[in-house]
Amino acid sequence: MRIPGWLHDLASVIYPDRCPVCGCTLAAGEHTLCLKCFAELPRTGIHTSGFNEIHRRTAHRTHIERAAAFFHYERHSPYSRLIHLAKYRNRPRIAEELAETYAREIAPSGFFDGISMIEPVPLHWLRQIARGYNQSLYIAYGISAATGIPVGDHLRASRLQRSQTHRSAQARHQAAEGLYHAVYTEELQGQHILIVDDVITTGSTVRACCNAIAAASPDTRCSILALSMSRND
Ligand SMILES: [Zn+2]
Image (cartoon, rainbow, N blue to C red; front, side, top):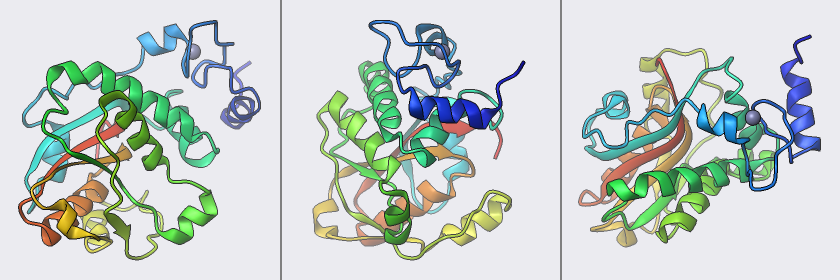
């Protein structure tokens, strides 16, 4: 019998020592995922590419230096539970642990060289109160733990955005423009900022964040890191 997804989620909240992907009990030495699920994680492997799928989706006014995502996100894949639990089920430590693991994996490639600050995509304050945390901040903490790069707090969500799930890429880009603004902008000058998010679909969110930084501080360089990216926008 196939276990329904919601029951799996519930079990993962009640028994956090289980692998969120397959549900098996984690053995000693296993963290976040069991070794089998970790080995089979659908990695994107795009972090070394100078112009990859994230660059393509975010190409606009602002130049993006480097871009990376840990794994491919597919709605019905059991790996999507990692994002779901981190975002909606009060398990942001999953995002933190995965981000730290990913950062340690790609650091030897030079991905983080010259990056001086990590900036999480902000939540509007009303959404943050409702959720109790910003999952992207935990991603930033994980990267910071692996790299020593400090976490900044220079982005704000200007207004509450409704769900974009069923809108076209063009509509999402338009809706996201002007959604974010930068603060304490003098601290951004001359910096190389890493914008971090949980999932990249159309890229409109991270693109709007990069545009907000560029508008406030034109000499600031931006790179992007996400835990996951959808296969299709
Ligand atoms: Zn597993």
